[in-house]
Image 1: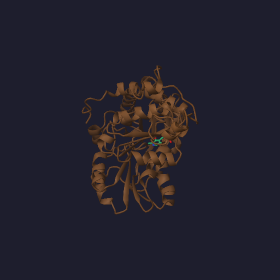
Image 2: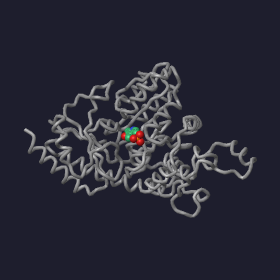
Image 3: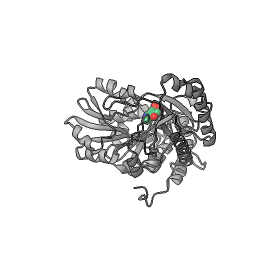
Image 4: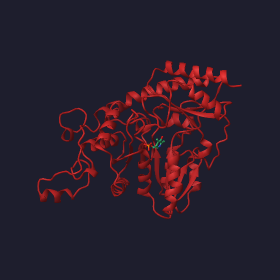
Length: 399
Ligand SMILES: *Cc1c(COP(=O)(O)O)cnc(C)c1O
């Protein structure tokens, strides 16, 4: 899988060259910001002509974007072999919700991984329920056995691999194969790996979703989501996004495109630094499990080795004997790690996470307190020193 994209540009080249069409952007290197709601036509005949197609690359009205958004979408499509197109959304959550609305109808059932991002669960349990769509949750390690859950109403599966709190790696190809045989559409929240480390469509996924807020933007300053799919679902995905009035600002698209140019080097550094820190944590006496897909502790580690081209910079570890209070003492003692939501930016973050609150299919039974780290682009030696100091303080105040 990893090396069969002969004929395609290598990923580092793709992110540098993607979407830079001369007829859209002129002579400048990065596509500039085209702000505009109204696009002016030459004459009435030209206006009429504009109604005949609905593709990126033709000025129509601001809601359909400008070269700034087209260029970004084009680059993201190119990074996902087998894709027909990409729609952009004002957040990752909007991308997930709109993708689900594109494929579900009243009376349908959707299966979601029990490790789903919490807002995905909430959208399914509250909003989709109001639309007459039922949601059931599956064990992220279910693999091909998911077929046993299929009923006549099952129409979609929303995967997330790895989960963003507990990092179980799913057998995406096996789940997609079972779903495909049953005519069920597969969606994957691919935010952790991005198409760089897990080309989702090549692994059988129909609809690949990314919270671009994270690694694509990479600088913690823009909210955005992206959904990429193949021919079969592309028209419906596009139409639904347009019907729901989804559009991202040219300014945000510009920043996301700027971030994208360095995605490859950033991801490789996030990967190296996060692995170094995860391995260091692993040998600390205070630490129980280290939930990093590239380490054997992580459920689904063998699948990660089989399917992924790399690991990004987000993982969790268990403070073995900590309760909520002592975990807070540890996190508060960190100086280089900020405390905040989101991840994928250049700055390191630490977050207390409690998966037990977000589970229904397989209860989370580990007793240690989990800490999730986003490893940024600081020198890993400084981050390790910061963690070591926090452990020291943690011991000095713990009984
Ligand atoms: C952050 C995140 C999202 C949502 O993205 P936003 O841009 O914050 O709305 C979706 N899925 C995962 C796994 C995330 O971490």
